[in-house]
Length: 116
Length: 115
Image (cartoon, rainbow over all chains, first blue to last red):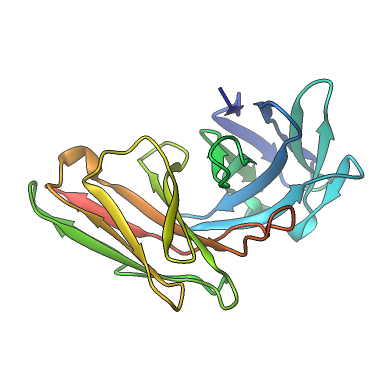
């Protein structure tokens, strides 16, 4: 079965330090991978995606993610964290898996807390 | 902000009642998906509509139903509400076209509380 794992419930980092939010996936075939961010009482905002090509993907707000096929990982990174980056981050994988339609399968989310 | 809007933003219903949630998709998008996000969890896929037809469904009972209209807006209907239906309901729109499918853009969600 297809799944996404975010092994850390929360990541704490000091402002200005680099941050990494981890994601691993299990899916047959070539995955389409996404990162979304959710601020309190808001919907999900798209950050970046990997479809094919370069393993390092750059996205919004200075975020980037590295696709590693051998480790089935898609970790989110940022060189220098901001307090305003504090939010809930979701990794997701998209099909089609069966039935010919696309759906997103999300991880449980990782809360990022950036301290001044 | 995305061009996806949902209404209402919050509502409170009593167990056993019925509820309708609405979503206006982003201009140019032809596919709408609905997700349920329970507190502390990631969103779970409910179903997807493409050109007014349901073309995929997650592990949700038949009392969860939907519609997509010619302008690609959509409704989610839930009958016989249960306490466990309390959640944030998210609508996502995208443009489907085989391998060129776009990423999904989400609305701000509807917070449903069942008491």
